[in-house]
Image 1: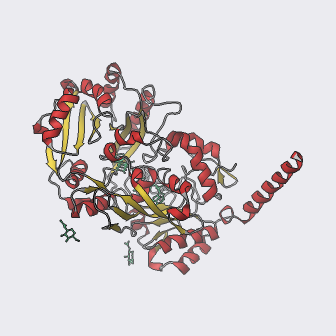
Image 2: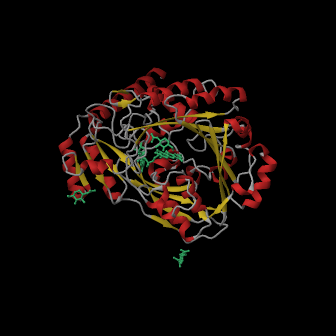
Length: 527
Ligand SMILES: Cc1cc2nc3c(=O)[nH]c(=O)nc-3n(C[C@H](O)[C@H](O)[C@H](O)COP(=O)(O)OP(=O)(O)OC[C@H]3O[C@@H](n4cnc5c(N)ncnc54)[C@H](O)[C@@H]3O)c2cc1C
Ligand SMILES: *[C@@H]1O[C@H](CO)[C@@H](O)[C@H](O)[C@H]1NC(C)=O
Ligand SMILES: *[C@@H]1O[C@H](CO)[C@@H](O)[C@H](O)[C@H]1NC(C)=O
Ligand SMILES: *[C@@H]1O[C@H](CO)[C@@H](O)[C@H](O)[C@H]1NC(C)=O
């Protein structure tokens, strides 16, 4: 009996796999012409830019932010579909499935490795669906405090557009997400969303109520139709894995009409290392209303802070909880929350809030970033060994984002973002170089410094934040046209720890043929 069952199961597996291998369109040779014809039959031709089109390059570059990955010889898409409606996204996926051409999706184009618009495999044939034209933001008028109002925000909107739209009409309404206003909602929400409001309200993904996604069959599904496993996976499991999210329903948050922003700068000569050493304990345990991040560049440390309240409250609070910082009323800048968003982006408290609405390309500076998490404070003696690195040739900077607060109240498995309780802070290593410089000093600096820091940060495995995408930590292996679980595990457990396996199981359930694939896409775990 047992043998019979075993054989039956084996036969089933063989039938299943051979059927899928033979009939899965994506495993056949890509039919580029068929794909393009299919697009032209289903999407207005003015929205389709093929490689030969005169302004293909302009469209390709339209939201790119890093010339390190946007190079003359990168593997480009066959075509770009500048979708303006969910039906165009559906058509692109269906045409891709039918003709064996994979599709990548781009919202804001800020991916650190450019995976939304380039491939690293020579000869790879793929299309790009660009969502910059799908960017409406609709704020609900149905709820009043204490019930949080909600909004639907489309993936092609930028964070700046979201902030501006929700706060312009009511200065007490906000949303927790990242600092740079040109980031796209689509990629950002897919990977987490670290920002100035996170200690009070968590990451962006902790405030998402519903979503509309085009799945691997080209169907448009909402939370109820996609099911809770997939809805779990798309909130933090990384972009470009499970489908194309067209829009998100978010829960907006309440902030006071006046907030206090301040940057306090201390040099090493002024005792910055003592203040920083102490910050590691204080930053993650301060009241939820304050977020104090740290920027280290040269021999200077900036404590960049947002307090959800008045100057007259935060000064006594910090002189009590963090006297080493030496904050005074003279450091305070009182403003609306929306103005604080502009301030943290531009460092200019008077820059117009309309600046949050600008988009575009930024190809002036080459950058490379990496990330770590710290659970045990680094000793003062060790910081003394770390600081000389910021005076070296090619030195960049680091940013420390304190955790704790609301982030800690959410279990590590409640969303794919696993870096919760016990994390003191995230470290982002950033290095940059201008045109005309080959970047070798900056690149060696970040690689050597990252190696050196290994002794002080979370390890076994050493972890990272998926929205700070870094291909150095591992790329996929593809066997028989499907990404292997064991290959994906190498980088996947660094981003997702114990949640990686569940992400791979969801992937197997919703995209078993691995249609949504990149160098760091979740592999299907076929059990
Ligand atoms: C200048 C700058 C500042 C940043 N600051 C912060 C910060 O403060 N906090 C923070 O958390 N992060 C920050 N980031 C990182 C940022 O969150 C990620 O790069 C994010 O993935 C970018 O989203 P995007 O839509 O702009 O990028 P894209 O390049 O369009 O997409 C990124 C990834 O998501 C996929 N994707 C895009 N849209 C969708 C969609 N609709 N559905 C499914 N998958 C999709 C893409 O295929 C790609 O794999 C910053 C990045 C930059 C360049
Ligand atoms: C591309 O060129 C066409 C024809 O010249 C023009 O109609 C279109 O607006 C251009 N699109 C972009 C995004 O530049
Ligand atoms: C690295 O981070 C900095 C600061 O957030 C950002 O300006 C830069 O664009 C990032 N690098 C990339 C995109 O590779
Ligand atoms: C907010 O919106 C309402 C209704 O649309 C409008 O009447 C009011 O003028 C707006 N207020 C501000 C400050 O923009």
